[in-house]
Every structure is written in structure tokens, then in C-alpha cells.
Image (cartoon, rainbow, N blue to C red; front, side, top):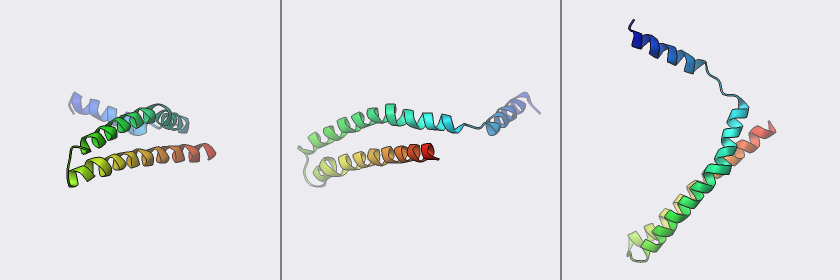
Amino acid sequence: MSKWTEFRDAIEADISSMSISETAKQELTKNLVDNVMPAVDAWVDKLAGGLIEEAKAETGWNKIRDGIVLPYALRALVYLGRQVLEKTLENTVKA
């Protein structure tokens, strides 16, 4: 075998034998909820606000898309993501 194959196989063996503790998973989830989600919320609010402003100059479907569909779809996705993370955190803490 070549040195590259041996190196690759060693890395694959190390990765496949790794396990992540439940505490680490909970900490990661908590950090996502506490630190990342507020930044995502702010970004989506800014993006949705910009879309709504641009919709004022649009007509027809583009006005509906930019003024209603996209802003609410973005906010709904962020809301669902936050709910999933919070429920996951809740359920793992209880268990």
C-alpha cells in the first residue's frame, strides 16, 4: 500500500471510532440557540425588511413575492429551526 492509502485509512479509522458525549451535544445546541440564532434572526429581519422595501416599487407577482411570500417564508424557517433546537435541548435535558 502507498503511504497515502495508509494515512487515509488511519484517519478514517480514527474518525469512525470517535464518539461525542451527550454533554458536548447539549453544549453545542445551547450555543446555537443562545449565540447563533440571534444573529440569524437579525440577518433575516434585515433581509426581509429590504425585500419589503423593494416590493413597494414592484408590481404583480413580484410585489407579492417580495412583500409577503419571501419575508414570511424566511421568518417561518428561522422560527421552525429555533423550535427544533429548543425542543431538542428541552428533551435531552429531561432525559
